[in-house]
Image 1 (cartoon, rainbow, N blue to C red):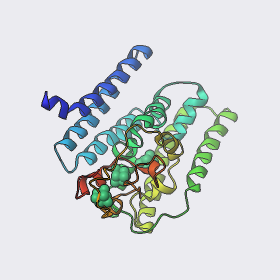
Image 2: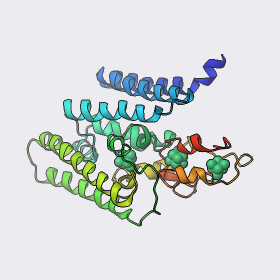
Image 3: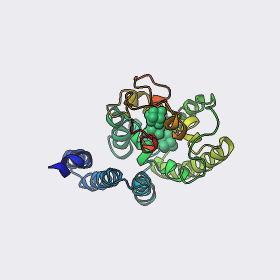
Length: 275
Ligand code: SF4
Ligand code: SF4
Ligand code: SF4
């Protein structure tokens, strides 16, 4: 019973993913969904299990397991564009499959429960950026967030124009835009990380997906909370946070609250166990 309580969260996470997988398998009559959500659920719950066992690289392991699966298997082998253009494409085509399901689960409704867990544990762009040397920002944030809205608008105009011009074989264009888009994301992401000495600069200023993630994660059920009776205001949590979150403030409006990627660096580094 003691062990069950301790490992309740990884079990629950796995069951939630299984429930989604089974529901989609039966409703869409496609067993792929069962495989897909079982794999992701197993990877995420393994990460939580290892985190509870205090394995230092638990998050990075999940990020690689899920990120590589999505990039290599779903993107390159199955040729599904899971980037934002793929989302617009399926949305305009009126199809609730692949990218639209992915966005609904990971980036629109899921964040109401697990916030920006996607950004900490699954994104294949950040999976690479997190290997770079600037794990915590050394400079204050720049006022460049408007760039992410420009990126959303550009993707929308691009896919909208393809539909309006009735271009043939859009699926092929989507596949190539996935390849070119990812190369561009990695190139820009790495360049920004070195310019701003911040691995997550791309996430903070350019990534168009944050336009969905931030408003939804504002209401996230899962949040890091600070036990004020233990906190000694040493500031270490804020210093190690890659996203500049004021995690000692428990209010929903805390500074950069919608930027939290649930990486647990603050929790692991708090000397008083206050988080
Ligand atoms: S902000 Fe964008 S690039 Fe960064 S982790 Fe999230 S989805 Fe990936
Ligand atoms: S690291 Fe812990 S003790 Fe220090 S300010 Fe943060 S929550 Fe408080
Ligand atoms: S260090 Fe803490 S507050 Fe900062 S992103 Fe990670 S989990 Fe969130």
